Image (tube, rainbow, N blue to C red; front, side):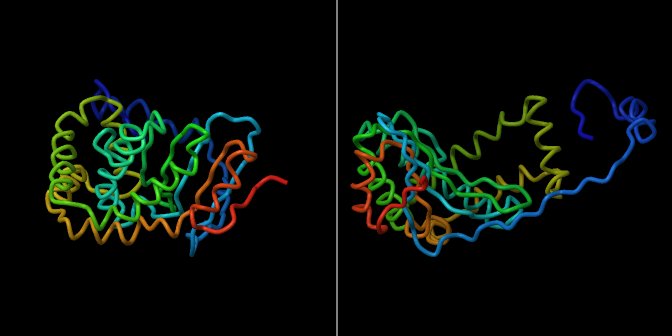
Length: 245
């Protein structure tokens, strides 16, 4: 039970004193499913929406759980790629540079179970291949080209944004949720700040090579197959697969 508000611990506990009597327990069967492994090589999949003037793109793979030691460092490494809004390369190149999309981002997600790394965007149909090719190029060059200036931009935002990141009741409740769900220490936010401050360019390059390989991802396109599907073999990942019969 997580509580944030203008109420002290004693009153809270008193109000919950007879909860076990009033709320009968029952057995719950939690489904167990097998998480698919990351792909050994990239494959393009296509879902046809005839006549669509926009293509929706999802690129990624099963990555890490939130509890993995590399989860937060990889999130830091992703900031300049696609987690930093207008500071990110994906936004700068696909939106600002080419005008292919209104918005694009990338992120790691997860809980105690395996989560995903995902790049998501919607682009004009007639630049579907060009958008995917640019994403592939950015991913391929990211670690190799990551600079000290990129690192300083990352550190500057992530450290300074902590100053007001935990002011609201909702933010405090989220912190309690993380502490109880993952067994993190109460000062985990300060620990993460220390991780950011200690990050090096070499670490970012290593994390990028490990978790941002464009040749080991699922490339999914939802759009007009008649006009866009035939071109996608030019991406270099073999023949695209139409996923509807």
